[in-house]
Image (cartoon, rainbow, N blue to C red; front, side, top):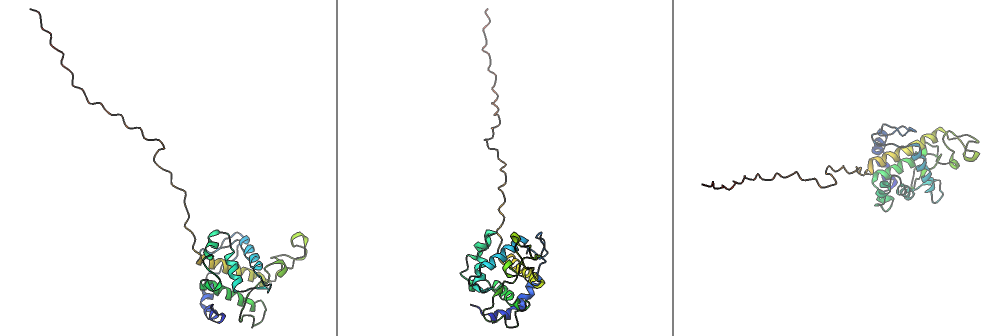
Length: 216
């Protein structure tokens, strides 16, 4: 398995690639990232799934938990089929492993300290769910069912957006999209057998009438 230190050496290259393809969140799903896009619903589903994959309750997503998250994406189906070919985090293409390290090391921007990105760093879950910081734009008393919901800090909002940006980008650029299957073209041939053209009967030569003998 590739070490975190080795991945960190790859981060400048990967970060440049990701930065050039960073998209701005649009609730309508629009963007200018050259094929990378996500909707508000997709982002919410991804973040919810990431929280659910925190099997050990550590408050972060480790390497294998990140693999489980990717392998659990069911819509569209071809994404799940793509990740089914890998046995675990160590088998993933390097760009997915770099994304995990990149997001894990964002802990420094979230005020977790300079040493948060060492050893088995995990993708932090700050602001991903109501219990971990609330929902976007929500304040006290605005949660589901009238429950209290803590509003997100601006850095948590940006972090949520960053996570969805990088997931969307790396999937769009690395997971092959199946060729669209078009509807079969309409057959030009009629369903019934064509009626053959009428055949012209050969012209018959007129028969010569037998000559009658004139009586003498």
